[in-house]
Image (cartoon, rainbow, N blue to C red):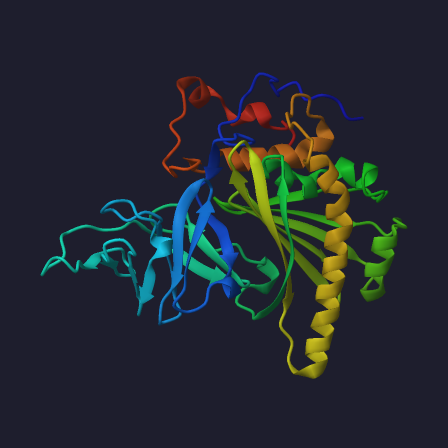
Length: 361
């Protein structure tokens, strides 16, 4: 029988989890790659910070702070020249490392550097690392590591709840029964991949008669359900059988006021030939159906929830394990992307207060 966990204090305030001013240092989505052509520059705001993103002649993406260090003109109004960016106002030019390489009114540029951010592309998306040097890889599907993939973009969504509320949804075992009407016993097994990645694994029993599961069982009887988290704000849901795997990435980032904006990305291993292409169209279509099926009802909750885990029970074990994992990561502040300095009272809090004493988290 599920009972309240005595080791969890209702007064405990996590440093990162559900905090409207904090997020984990890591990789975050910016814009789809196809939205940035060679020689173009765009203004974007990511995690409260204003940025300019451009694609140089070499087709590489560069992300810099939005405002020129001279007088603060917005660099997205400027012009891409080769692999460099020239400010529209006084025509100061900066290279891909942020160094000022030309000032028209001077024979030699002064020693000034524009802040640049580590940037990469994967799954048709441009990503930015919110620290100085990337310590971990871009979020990726573990089963498809180092493999070519086909990608289909799903919905772009905005919700009034924190990204952490969005993230815990796939490991909330209780809501599969109550919201999605899947009467299957769910017991997630936790495995930490690295400091910034954790996976929860579950095998769905054959006694469930859900319409969705009956559809998936066309491709195999044994269904497994895994969720891999990266940096606390991106998760990849994998539902698979012996012959079919579908992968849904929910890339979410924090907005001011504790709100969220997210992009759904549907991913499948690339297959060769016309039949391989047709098979992948079917797989991605099925993946989109699954994504819509789960998201449409969950969004009703995420639009209005005021998430506070004051009375966790044993069925919430996976959620608490996720919180523990999140709390051990590096917290940054919204807008500034500076390290969040915790108050003494927060430092003294121990992760055991969120821990199921029977788990090995």
